[in-house]
Length: 115
Length: 114
Image 1 (cartoon, chains in turn yellow, blue):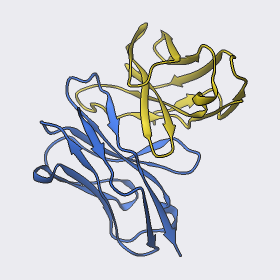
Image 2 (tube, helix red, strand yellow; image 1 turned 45 degrees about the vertical axis):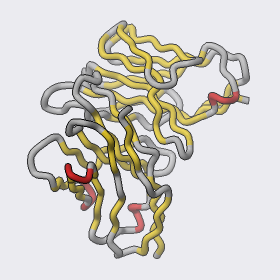
Image 3 (cartoon, one colour; image 1 turned 180 degrees about the vertical axis):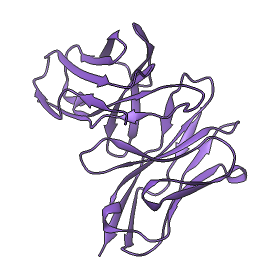
């Protein structure tokens, strides 16, 4: 089974702090994604990566950056956390192959609270 | 722009009753279609997917979905709901040429009464 893990289930940070959310997948997937989930808004894509050191902005990249130095690890960085970044953050990965295009596997999520 | 609509924010059904959750999309071509389920405090789990072929697809936990091209719909169904099915359900679509990205609906929260 594909396993996607996230470094923390719950995180509380102060306004202005730099925050790192880590995601690791163990299936050698090419693609990795970061979403935020808010009630009534569903999942919104922040950033994604289709290869090591390659990244593209999603729908809501403002206030976030990402890093992918190794294939299995994709980090989301909040340069200066703000209260409007309080949310559930979900990481996902996908093989992106012709046999399973677009099928994404999700981690358990990190609930971030910024006070 | 591409979009996915789940018109029902919240649905309540009795245990043992049948269930249908609606999903509509707006694209020119046939997309890849998915249903995911999210239990409270958890990540998303894939229920089923449609890429091509038979328009009625079977998934895990007794769920099925039917792709109807003429209606741009991919509704999720279950003949008899169990209390453990209470969760949030997300429809998602992917289009070729979009770097494996998925677009998600806003979700439908299912409550099951005993």
